[in-house]
Image (cartoon, rainbow, N blue to C red):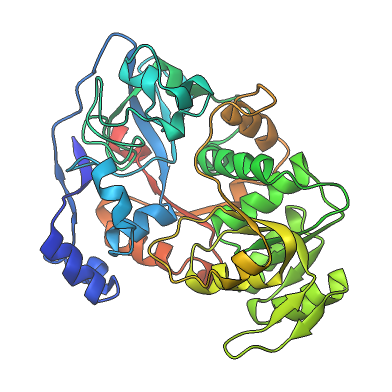
Length: 391
């Protein structure tokens, strides 16, 4: 089958990282991503099915891996070579359209009894990701056994598959996986009705976090920090009350909360500030700003995937901040599955307009280059379109 495959190479990783990722799109000789004919993944067991992707998104975690900026913490939790692509809308052999829930927990791996985290309904935190019916991997798209959305066929356990309502087009359905991540983040953050909430960053994860917070935990005021005018427009449509450029965030949060602003050597800080911040950039600057404009005793939820970022722990310590990670999805404290909540919410959200442009696998260099600079090009979710491969 035709697929893009990520082939692990530490020399190539070092070269790509040293060039800031530019080698990735300039030449395949330095890239760890290769287009070619690869074996179709085998079905690991009777509860598994073949899925033919229609659309598959390019996620920030994908571009981080391709450009050499992914956290090396994830390396022993991944098996190589793998076909990327975990934001997938596709079809089963009988034509049923599905989205794939990528987490590869105990149930998927055929492990019984399940680990404590899977028993809690949190397969993204599974403690058996090196065991069972498939190779090492936290998710589909990072596992050598399953294939991924950047290839003609992947395999998925029946528990990973969610049927798509007829009225939801592929362009909207491809955002269900990141929306589920953001619904989980919103519920982990647990904004209260009197809270002032900041969502920092307005890529796919930031915008969908705005939508999830507005739908599931609506606060008194929801502030979106967005770099580009197009992102601010989308944040407004998805429920933000206030739109702020990154350079204005301290001043605007100050006015919104009645905080006092102090000038620091490297950046300002607020005495007072936001009750709850969702940090969706995963970058050092965003993380360091968030812990300085979130009030003492407040909460910061890390939603965007960080690498090895330099963060000043002084504000976290002195302000007694609660800093929480938000990864993947599962069964929430309400007893509802995150993917089902996301599918239900998608009917009322303008998701299709967030998807595009679409690229063929053969144009993967252009697709990756576009995804790396999506915001400045008035785009949110760049994706591969594999439907023509079945024509």
